[in-house]
Length: 280
Ligand code: C2E
Ligand code: CA
Ligand code: CA
Ligand code: CA
Image (tube, rainbow, N blue to C red; front, side, top):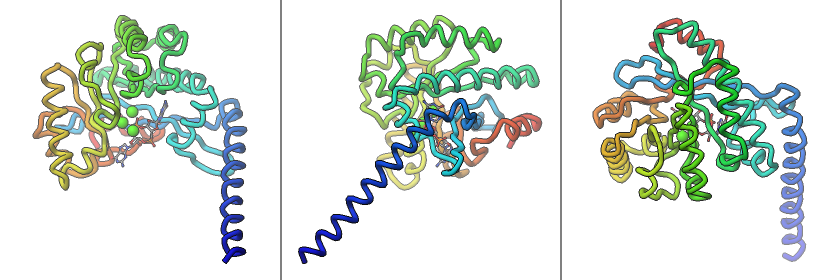
């Protein structure tokens, strides 16, 4: 029994060693990924739930690793945060997303498109976020009102006062802020009316569970009435079925995104989607 136990332990140790090695290898390649141009953006349309018309896009980051293939942002973003290089990545995303938005707005002025960019909690209050944003808007000829920044509730827990200051400055540049994954974090409702937020994004977990779980349904209803009371916009994410679409529309949610209409796609495919006046 003893040797068996030791054998198991050895296997366990080996897998930890492998995980550590893999992690170190990821860190090394992550450092080089930008200059090797292994990152690219995909774009998921944000649509009017009633008509399916494209109103804007969310930019989502992808890493094409030379040997491991496509790596999910849920894997490499936390690592980049821990390594302290996330601000470099966020800047890259901001610049490229704005460049793309400018191009699409020129091609389709009648659609008045917007672009949403995710900001990492780890670097939100990085020294010159506001300067970076205004500079990027300037260089890419994008108006502040067409850029949306998505942040999560965890930012507010870190440093609520600094966050409020930064949000106010961004708002002064016309940039709107959306609270992402709403309801999944450590929500404190008290900050909601004090921050210059444009809207809330209903997390896809509630959307997916709504049909089966009365609790999720109640949470969605609460978020909707909260948003209506505070005059905040609502975007429902992760809509995959027509039943989910009808449910959210019925509750009074105007905007949505999800596989029902479009998956996140390359800029080329998104350009094609726009050719069809944004109808899926
Ligand atoms: P998120 O901001 O909540 O993004 C929504 C995620 O839901 C995306 O996953 C999107 O592909 C996925 N999604 C959209 N529609 C559906 C649907 O109908 N069904 C299902 N099951 N999923 C759907 P993705 O692209 O893997 O991104 C995961 C997370 O990584 C994002 O969650 C965001 O937190 C983070 N992320 C992605 N890009 C960036 C970035 O450029 N910067 C930062 N800081 N974070 C990013
Ligand atoms: Ca998001
Ligand atoms: Ca989200
Ligand atoms: Ca999420």
